[in-house]
Length: 258
Image (cartoon, rainbow, N blue to C red; front, side, top):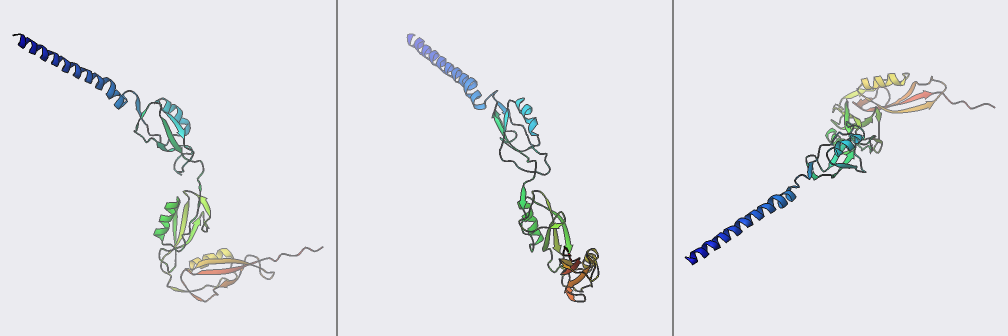
């Protein structure tokens, strides 16, 4: 009988120890481990700050127990407002501790300058890729008669032909003068002598040719602004899209008489 009581007592002690152990482990898991693992009550969700202007950030983030710092380097997006947020770190929807600093990249007020690449003699497809890679935008495509089909003949910014290395704002549109592949046609060069520059350009383009170099010659026998020479000459046979150089008269500068 005594052995039976001793056995029951030992079982009861063992059960009590097991229960106590389970209770202690549960307490540690629920009250210590789990809160520290999940940062319960100490984390916030990072909001999306893209498009916010810098003077809006202080109050918006402080209301959410967050702070911010502006990165030294800025970016540029022509469609975004100056000094608005372009990028942030940590990213939106990240879980961070309260008081965490969010690093933001702002949109610059003025577009940075980009050196114009050389697109002349490139295929149109390649030229478009190059423009996109350097941060420029392809503008109008101007087809002109030329034997090179979809080959860039000229690059223009705001109506002006620009060379390689010319600096223009990032995001600017660059118009491309492109050959239409019809340059095998043989044309007769019209006579330009006696015309002014505007009428001559109209006639040249209307004839399927292109304006070439414009030169000025001092003379006192022809009124200023009149074409006195052209190359190739009138009547010459040329291919479609070839340039025509012209020489324009200007008044001679008279020496001062003392």
